Image 1 (cartoon, rainbow, N blue to C red):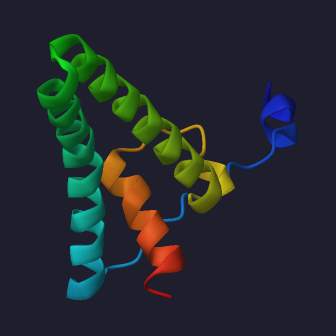
Image 2: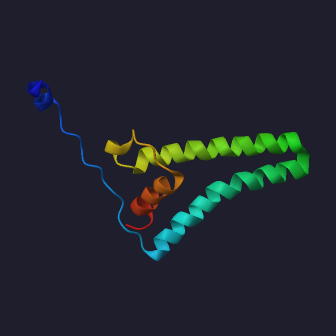
Image 3: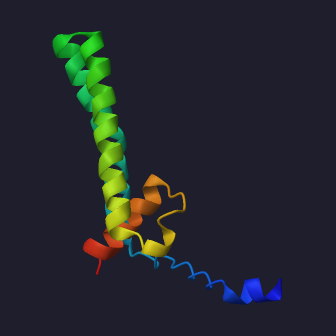
Length: 103
């Protein structure tokens, strides 16, 4: 039994994001608000212009597009050792801001 444990590779340590400055924290919150409010705004616009069914469909489509963008951001900016972990929208956007805006 001990031999099996010794043959297993060690798990990579989890890399944590660094502490953000106020400007970078504001960028994370603005992106998060954008990911929340833009689908709502698209749905309301479509509802007012074309009716409630099109508004609902536009809102759902905007939600799906946002989820696809977040998954691409997760794959591109979160360390490979953490891809299997569950991350919130805030955490994904925080890694994005750390790696692209606040270098």
